Length: 322
Image (cartoon, rainbow, N blue to C red; front, side, top):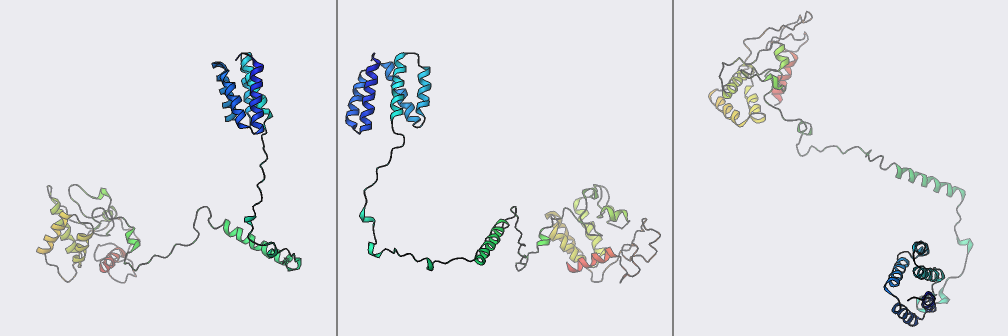
């Protein structure tokens, strides 16, 4: 199509037919218009239609920018025609009111309550309004402090011991290795000597408390287990309970076999045995002038209820309660 006026007139006819509601005539004008277009003009028309469809509210801005960028008079005429048609259309069409549907009425007019009684309405007094305001403030504060920074302020429920589980003991880590034969506390890895284990921790060894006699070089693990069994049987009267605790708690499968074999060949004696070779302590001060413990030869308190020191007494209580 080479005549710009003819294109503008055809596009105006299409726009007028669409606004009038005559879609059939608008389609006939549009078909006649497209038949007269060449490839270049057809591409410009397609681009303008796409712009109006993508930007239905601000298409005039994009069409104006496309008109300024056009290089031919034909392109400018086509774009200007689309811009004029877009400006003339109704952006906010008013919806056609629906005809009244009498079927929506479910109550007869005679049954509608049209009486207005102001005296029947409840009027709030100032006291009622103040009470409602106080209640609203209380509810707002309760809702605000219900979850304080994700922290539950309610105390946790008390543990139930009906199952027989002692939560304090269950939280304690398992013992690594064998405990000290004097204070029965866990020993550090440095206390396990490579050539011979005396069974003492560093504190008891510094205090000079006697431990397991040193074994000859080249001894095996079974020899060390038997030496520990001999020391417990010679030092404590209730060595049966100590060996049972050792076998159950911190003995390896190989150690359990040696402990069982030792207990089978060494019957337990009823009266408690005492340590026959006490080792004198070198860390006793001048203030320790009281009597010595009959078991570890360590100074004991003057008001002690028996002949044992505090550490040995705690060991006896632990063994008795085991």
